[in-house]
Image (cartoon, rainbow, N blue to C red; front, side, top):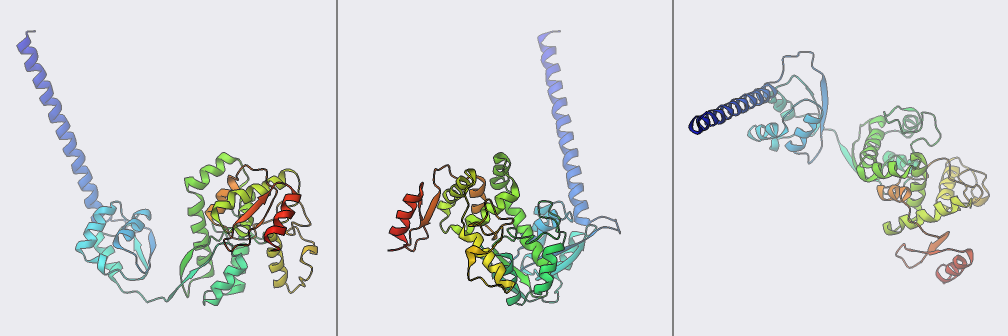
Length: 353
């Protein structure tokens, strides 16, 4: 074959390939456009699953689109958001809980969320770190949410769908798992829904790579980490010290030294107080939560810790400290010691001045 013929043949092949690529692109584009149009029009499945979507104060059409996509109601979030703008939905979102189905068209969805719902009064509550489950329940009921006895029943026996939670009937079952944060609740919200919000928030926090990957690499027992994190939360006031405080307690466990944590004793005192027991001699109360009397960790967490305390429990600092005491200077900082003699000097210097 001559050079001219070879060149003509190559050009024909290039043109053919270009045409095939162009046709394939057009087909893919057409199929994509058809899929978008089908999503916009909805399906003809009359038995489609119904989904409840809650709109809270401050929510946007973009957040609604994400919620609908996560629930499988729509496929194309950005298309929905753009069409919602033209439908003025972004300025007309109503607060409430709405029911949609997976067979709805975008226009039908828009109409649902433009409809005014019966207004449900809400209350916003901030739960600071370190609160116990009992304290959280008290704060909820003081703000008009739920019934104390019902909360206790739900916490003790409800199945929340998370397999890492202690089994139903376990004493102090959800201690450590009600994540401290700011929440907005409906005043008529069920106790089950309220508790589930705490647990869902906890699950989102600990399943991040920041926590979950570290936990897996550490090889530590998850529940023991939660117990240790709850103690660290109560014993520390400065985030930068949490890993150091964790090292003190882990060092004590290694040599079978009693933890002697005021956090566990304070929790015990609160439990005894709720039972109406005398707490005059707190350190003499015979209980596994009394870490001045018993070796090892208490049986459950003693507060609801934050992520920073959980990470400190997973990755404690490597130290040779066995003691710490407050600097007593208003900063919340501590001074650490390796020996009892050094610790006693620190106590004399900082706590008795």
